[in-house]
Length: 207
Image (cartoon, rainbow, N blue to C red; front, side, top):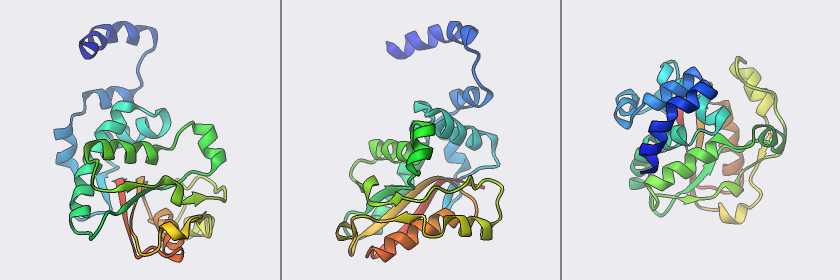
């Protein structure tokens, strides 16, 4: 009933607050559309150059869209189930953290939204543990930077404050987009240094 009412009221809402182009794209997206875009054997599941995948990421990253997060979670859940089937024991699921100043500015962490949405569709495939990785150093925006610059910016920017909970564990770290792999490399360094046995990287999209 709520869904029907929201659909009926949507034209009126759009008149008052015209929707963004990316918002319109996400409204029309369905699970089947995204499944057709999935790139097998890649760290990033969707091609960021596709406007539908890019709209999904933008709506989640900048506007905390629940629809975008849910759709992204469905795609991520499929990959998590596959990962978990090859791992002995329950893996830890850790989102790439934001520095507290960036999180305060944005109001949310899109990687956390993505992890929570994925676990809603695959609740028993991993243990959610966002507190096990922290970004203690504020870094500049990475978009458009070369890989060596990204690596330099991110060096020693993350730490794992609870090594006793990581020792011997398998970890899956999640981000919304990967470009050069520099963010994943820094997260992996911090987790392995704290005693994690294995660290796998998974992003919703790859540019």
